[in-house]
Image 1 (cartoon, rainbow, N blue to C red):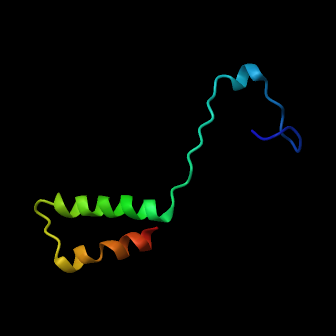
Image 2: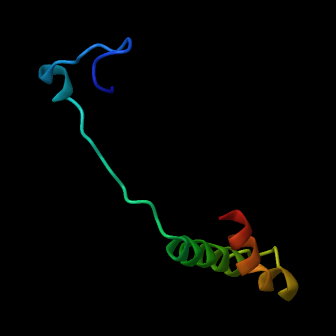
Length: 68
């Protein structure tokens, strides 16, 4: 829904009023790192029958950094 022109048609205010505009600021790398490190920590602690070795648990920061 860009501005009219180039094959785009204008849209009326009657139509647009039925929609909401939502904007979410992109997360910083530090925030993403903190969020996903906490998720990985939760995964390791709630694994139940799956006991991860200390070597795998120690790679948490590298896994998150590689994913981001």
